[in-house]
Length: 326
Image (cartoon, rainbow, N blue to C red; front, side):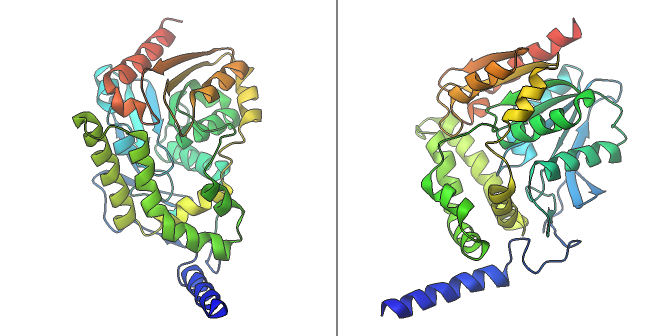
């Protein structure tokens, strides 16, 4: 009986793996998985596929680029910031990372820091913005992408804002560690099976008091984003899985040290009660970033900028205005 059950489980895992491969198994390098629903913004044809983006504001204004996190999309992540930036006379570019929102999910590639850095680099060149020095803002995993971009192309970045940023070692749940270490033919079907429910639980865990209307609205917003990703982007889970396996989410120490040797100003914005990427990570970053300033959001979790949107936007705007005076 036990042997029969194990055989059935093995067959199911193999079916999940080879009927819907995770990106490296049996996929041509040029193939992409596209969004099923065309987004209201614009799509840029760049190396790797189509990237969804929005570019708003007067072209004479300084450019702020917003990079969202692991499983969200740009419009949901930065609802709190886009309009305040535009009103303060900044030009704003925000876009969906590969496999998220309405951007393609390239197949046959490694979802590492280089892939996401080149996505931003190619997008800037496509929009003829590669000569501009940008103010770069990264949230969670988007912070790690921003760190790596700033490390690779320091002359292109005027300032760096890291919001609850990945990049340093974390205490991860055992299930996440397990998926990272399992061979693809087991790890991918396991991730595909479990991750939709786990992503919803992650947001709920960061919003412990759903009796409050504000927290209910935040949960609904992120839940809507998750469902858009799951229902309208065939490559979403595949991209997340490859990112879990390939992306150096906890290995940006060398890049941070290099950035710390540059006079560029850095803002760290963190929720004091962040469980996913705790405040201790911000204090570690301060040790290697002498030009950084840390601002905390009282009572804020990993979605602190959604919990205190006015404070978060005002803090970032104040940081940017101070740079204008230097």
